[in-house]
Length: 389
Image (cartoon, rainbow, N blue to C red; front, side, top):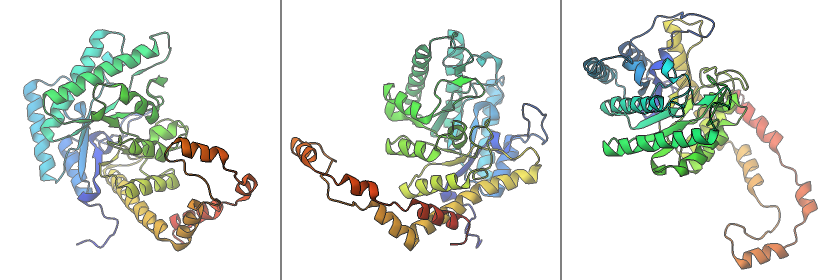
C-alpha cells in the first residue's frame, strides 16, 4: 500500500481526454514529435498513472468515415480496454471543428445542411457515450463564431444554437440516455470571436432553453484566463446557480493563445483558490484535465505530465486544508466577517425593514477608517503555498 498522500485514487475522480494524453505534440508551426497512441494504448497509460476516467470526442475514438460495423467494433473494443484498466467514461463530446464542412461553424452555420449535419454528429456522439456509460455531454462551440459580423446577425446565431441544444435535449430524453449537457465557453480561437465567450454568457443563455434543468456549464481554466478573467469566480457563479456540471482543469498565461498547460503550471496561486473552492463546497463531479504535455516530451514525459496534473491538485487540496486550519488565518477571516457597527438586516425585504434602513444613521467615517488585513492574509497564503508555514 502506498504511503504517498498525493497518490490519485478513484474517489478523486480525475479524468483525461483521449485528445490530451494522446496529443502527439503537433502545433500550428510544427509536425508531431510523438507517435500517435491508439485509444487502447491511451487507456493503458491512464490506468498506469492512476486516473479514474477517460473522456473522448466522437472522432478521437471512431473515424469520421467509419462504417456502422467498424464503429460498433471500435466502441466495443474500447469499452473492454477501459474495463481492463479500471477506467470509466464519464463524459463525451463532439468534434464540430476539424472537418472542413464546419469551417463556418456547426450549430450556427448559415447553411441549414451544415447545421443539420452538426446535430446529427452530436447525436452519434451521444450514442457512443451512452454505450460506454457516459452521463455528461460537453458542448464546445469550436467554430461557432466569426471573423466578420457581416456573415450573420449574432442574435440569429444564438437562436440557431438554442434550436440545436433543444433538439439534443429531446433526443436524450427520447432515448432515455439521462445526459446532462455542459456548455463550454471560450473567447476566441480558432475563430476571431466565439459567440459564447464566457461562462457567464452561457449562464444567461441556459434559462432560455426548453429544458434548462438538463443544461449546465463546463468552465475551463485556460479559456477564462485567455480573457484575463478569474476562473474561481466563474466556477463559483456556476456552482451557486446549480449549473457546475463538469470542469476542465489546465493552466494558461493570461492573454496568450490557448496553451493548455499542466494544471497549476503557470498560476499556482489561482489554482489554489480554485481547488480550495471546489473542495470546500463539495463539488462531486469529474475533475477533468483538458491539457497536454509540452512538445519536448516523449511517452515518459506524457506520463509525467498526467501524474503532475493529479499530484498538483492533491497538493493544493492539502494546502487548502492547512489554510482553513491555520489559527492566524482563521482569526483574520473571522475578524473580516465581523460587523464593525450595528446595521439593519437586508436579507429579506419588507416595508418595515426598508423604513428601518432609510432611517438608520451609519458612522461612515468609521467604516472608511476600518483597516482590513488583506496584506497579512495574502502573505500567510503565500507562505502556506511556498511550504514555510
